Image (tube, rainbow, N blue to C red):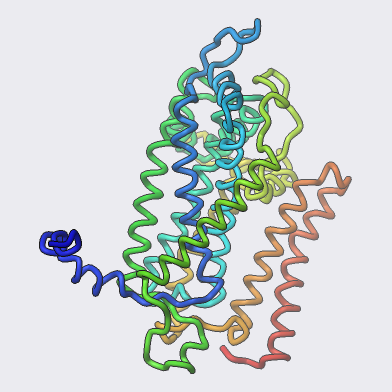
Length: 410
């Protein structure tokens, strides 16, 4: 009796093959953004397991090279001293960047193609949650080396969380273990980074993929003409899995080249935490929030009942990102125009949605640009004008050009 037959009698592999492994996947380059997000998560888990073997989640002082230094900081120095330790830590860092970028671009593709509409509202919401959880996980990873950069960057996040009216102290207690940094901060952030948030990400990815398989993948627009009414693509096994395997190996090759050539976050350069605040800027996916905080005057305060107040930190770090997130959550329920559920929509056929998306991207670009306010020697007034008028201009120009070229399709 063959091994396959033995397993088939017990696990009904033929039914599994027919029901799941023969699912058709469309072959389109933009659809691989979701796979790259998954590859990044797998890489982060594997490299993260290696890092946990040498990392000590503690801020207690230990003796190292004649100095009293935080244990977390010293443990990262130890990891860097291991064979390929620094490279694997660098790979872990850049994989997080790629995961954030791939998840954002994946959601952007869904947005401009209208694939968030009925019946895919749930997967759109799961995708937003996945992107948000990825960003939060990456932010918490900032704190773990516990060097001067980490402490300063985490203190900014702590200030933003604490600025939330009425519940700020509770958020600070849950996330940071109290006023950051305390003795409990690193263990609390470590548990969130390596356990609770990865479990949440696993659950979100799993449910997201199950719903996608249940609803079937959206089809490229050309499939409507080539095979109308049919699902055009290749089966999950063996063809799609073969393509994904090759892409994963290519991804790993490029990632290790980047990780080896550009060593990320050299903590010995930043040094251990000090009482002074080093000049630093957050990574690119937080720089737009940092830019908004740079141009909002600290004097902006709105008193609220019971002693609470709205501060500039809350406006730039919570309110503006929260409004954008709320719009994204409500989008599939506000945009309920009829569409063919199987096929993606061409951006050129929807000039208003596409132009608004372009305007929103320019908002992020200008806000990121504002993060370099001091280096560029630009005034707050100029940056505010750019933040308001550049996105509006980009939206109008894009809309007019698309109407002229493609006509009113919506």
